Length: 263
Image (cartoon, rainbow, N blue to C red; front, side, top):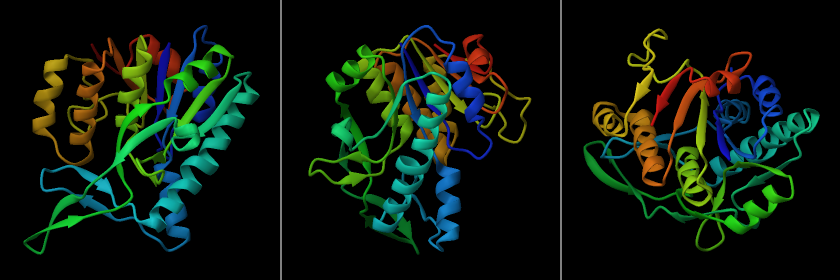
């Protein structure tokens, strides 16, 4: 069992990823993003996204009703269905689901994000939250019947409302339920970079302890990613590979250990 997380960047090579996946001889679950597509839609509709930074240094996209509509169009709509289409073209019997479908990803809505604006603390509430559990019987039944789940946001909160969430956190709750032997995260870089501006500075391996140290050294979205990676190992992940999603054979390269290996 594998969990494949596909980033939502503009240069991610989706066709190459799916072609590699079609050659695998074990089941897998896909979790995908669509941030570049969402941003293009937001620009076209003159609805630019707003990013919040909490007082603790974590960043997130402000998810009001308009932002959630854009998210549904980009993630659960166009990107999800085009990815399912690609899978079908390569012989993968994929089924696309957002977290609200069958409550496949259940979460808890944030009670508010503490931000500092104009020197004052403010509590901002929106339609975002953290995943808490997955519909494991549904996922296992789909896998047993030969379907490949292709999952994305939004997820569903305690009251049945759609909410935005972080795919890194979704992968963590999936791992807690499915106990994959390997998690592959495909990004727009050759791996985790020691210097974000230098593509040659790939860190080839990291330990769980080093993740915690690096979380203290970074900020913004990278800080959130480090925390989510630590959660993966708390949830039983034996091995994670962060690899380049732009190359001709992304999955083959990741399985060969190219990129950053964390174990």
